[in-house]
Image (cartoon, rainbow, N blue to C red):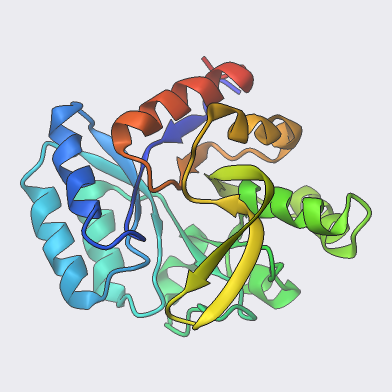
Length: 239
């Protein structure tokens, strides 16, 4: 477990607040982060990249791809920040990727969501799995340990490479949120907003499904995410 790395994540779901996280990079002396530009269009991503270049950031080992990201962006992130792994959503997901990233397939891992388990076709196309542990736990809380999708995820985890993880909060009860892009209401246990560190305790049951690169996917400030990182390292015996 000693080689596993937990990264604070620069997420972009809350409009405008991602710029606060960019400022935190130098304030906290961070040299590497995970990047989640999934709520930014092409113009906004260009602004993000320009701002990141003005910081002391050295590495972005993991990037969550957005469905409109061009191959040139993957080249840029790899050459500038040494990105090792990317992740996409399943072919059945609303946010599925339709881009031809064939030059990067060996670095791309497919993510599970609460409503979409990776398909066999996904796993033939990409390098393996990006296990989002909060989505997985939310699925189990909704459908039970014996649910067919939980059983399928366990099977996939035993048969395919796990290239990266996402970790977010899991609440004791379902919460409501509205997705502006799909214009749908959702109710789920998982959340990108952490209130208490105990909302991470579920991760202990997934120790066998941890990748070497583990990315925190929370809207909380990076300073709070460093507390999350320390807590996760403790409960997972990684410190």
